[in-house]
Length: 331
Image (cartoon, rainbow, N blue to C red; front, side):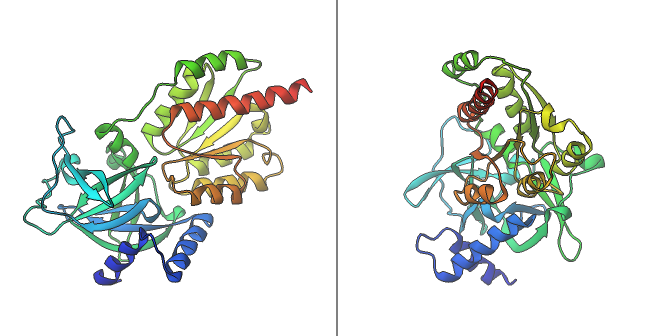
């Protein structure tokens, strides 16, 4: 795809008045998500390496202004805020955060990827967007060897010509820069005591992000319950299929959507297709907080969709599920 065409396409993603062809493109991306595929924007920083971000998380791509309003007492890699559709959006120098040369946006043409994570809008300064590619999640792999030691690399993929694309753990990056709430309110902690531990509650968490796994486990622990933590939906599915008592072992499953090899939509669909596992309670929990994900979650049979990271909302949903189970047992 030529850059001019890519630029026009990306600038249409966030338009308020979408044309029919844009609706068609959104529908196509939705169908990709339901078939274990994702569309990725590939972009460059200033090291010549290709990086990728899911198109579903992009609001718009714009040229970086040469003047950005500074924020006092902010993280060193936050350049400040820009005005985006009447809102002040925090703008982050992604290269600087990764230890690369800072982006010289004042003197060189640069771009900002306006993205939405966890119901928050932020901008990432990059050198240049490159292209859009579609990949099956089976083609997106977890890093291995020395690459697995990179704290902010969550997956890798490849272009048609074989160049590596690094997919960053944006959730962890934002956690480091902006911070992510972890504490469950005391009111909900007290509510958990009312629900009580009528049985051994055991929650299965599946997420490829270290930060997300830690935060989910923290919420579950604060409620007084136990958790099994997994990072691969594909591996977890095989474990569940091979365990004849899996459906009775876990009170519920909390599953991310974006994961290498198998995404959360595909995982949920396969669980519902399995006679032994089909009644397991599944919560899809994702930083892709676009409302369309609720519809996709329902289509594949998830019991609920919750946007990350909202400790109280996650805790409330866990307690509501446990209360439902308790009520059924009392019938």
